[in-house]
Each structure stands twice: as C-alpha cells, then as structure tokens.
Length: 256
Ligand code: NDP
Image (tube, rainbow, N blue to C red):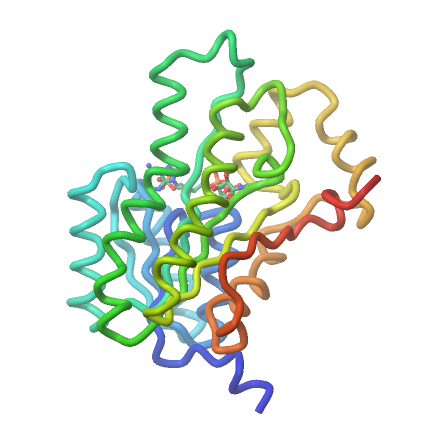
C-alpha cells in the first residue's frame, strides 16, 4: 500500500535542466520510482550521458536538446515527448542560472536572461504541457524556487525576483488548474553543492562557511537530497497538496 502511493510506473516526467545538479538528483529519484524520464538541456553531450546512466539503471529515458527560453523549442520538446511516450504526467521546471551582481551593476540584458531562464521558462513549459495533462485527467508540475524566494541577497537581484515570481506563478497555476486535477508545487532548495554554487563560492567571499554556520543540519545539500521530495510531489501521495512552496534546506530557513 505504501509503495503504491509513491509508484510512478507508467508515468512520463520531463525534467528541465535534468542533465546535472539538482535536476539530475530529481531525475534519478523519479526514474527509481518507475517514471520514464525526458532529460532537457542545451548541452547534448551532458544530457546523453545522463540518459545512458538512467537506462543502465533500468529506466526508460530520452534526451531532448532545447533552450527553455525559446517558445518554439519548448513546443517541439512537448510534441516530441508526446510522440515518444504518449503523454506527459509530470513536469519539473528546474532549469536555472544566476548572474551575481548588485542591482546597480546588473545590465538589462543580464536581468532579462535570468528572468527568462528561471521564470519565463516555467510559464512556457507549463502552458505547453497543460493540454496533455488536462486530456489525461491530471498531472503534476514541480517548480524550483530557492531560499531567494524568501530572502534577499545583495548579489542576486534578478535571481531573487525570478524565484519570488516562481512561487507566485506556482500558486496561480495551482488555483487555475485544480479543476483539471493538476497539482502545482514549488520546492525551495537551500544551499546545494552543484556547478551553480561552485561558481557562487568562487565569486562570493566567505559563502561556504556562512552557509554552514547558518544551516542547522551543518552541511551543504547534495543533488540526491531532492529525489524524495520530487517523488512525493510527482506521485499520488501528494494528490491533495497544491500551491505549496516546500523548503528542502537542512533547516536554513527556520534558523532564528
Ligand atoms: P546547475 O547549474 O548544476 O544546473 C542548471 C541546469 O539548468 C543545467 O542542467 C542546465 O543545462 C540547465 N539550463 C540552464 N539554462 C537552460 C536553458 N536556457 N535551457 C535549458 N536548460 C537550461 O544548477 P543547480 O542544479 O544548482 O540548479 C538547478 C535549479 O535549482 C535552478 O533553478 C537553481 O536556481 C535552483 N537552485 C539551486 C540551488 C543550489 O544551491 N544549487 C539553491 C536554490 C535553487 P544546460 O547547460 O545543458 O542547458
């Protein structure tokens, strides 16, 4: 009974940015629970390597190269998923970037690039996936926010705006699509050891130790910390959970 609640056999999951970092941690979790995985990213070699890893583990998986800021590419990615796997049950909007500068130094083009990659992409992918989910009688959308959905940081004006926006976008979709049995939730990762934060640690003095000092669990997170929450939010276990923003942060956001 318990296993059945989390069983994703026969489900199809798209994970944008699934070729590395947190996206890969979620893709591995979803695949282990039985879902077929569509790995989406721009770097074809990285995506193909992940597909090889997932299929070696017994999962069905394909890679689709797409820039998620490009509406035509997103529409083609959705169409190809449907033709390969016959539907879309789970969409994980995870692709993201940061450009670390204070607000007075950030160029408009940099602002646009971060907002498009982190926020507009979630709109494009969700809107494109919606008809298939509606027709199938339901679906699960998981958007990736951040501690910057809650807190500010001097070096992340566009990033924080995009991640705050993700939470509100999640709530809007949750309300709009509840009648279609589509649950939309956000995950707010704490500080996780990935390529993104390896760069941050190079660029922001003292970041590594500041994070450790503030995190009650006394460690940086790892990509595999996201397997369980992804399976929960993608499965029948979360059918009455919608519009939430769940921190996965080792207690970072509740530290007084
Ligand atoms: P990584 O840099 O390791 O991964 C980012 C992923 O996004 C890559 O797979 C990349 O693939 C993909 N991507 C970026 N731009 C595009 C694009 N235009 N089109 C398609 N894919 C794209 O970062 P993380 O794993 O750390 O981050 C994943 C998510 O988690 C992001 O949304 C990030 O903001 C969020 N997050 C991360 C935290 C952390 O501490 N690491 C904390 C809070 C939130 P490719 O290069 O092949 O396109």
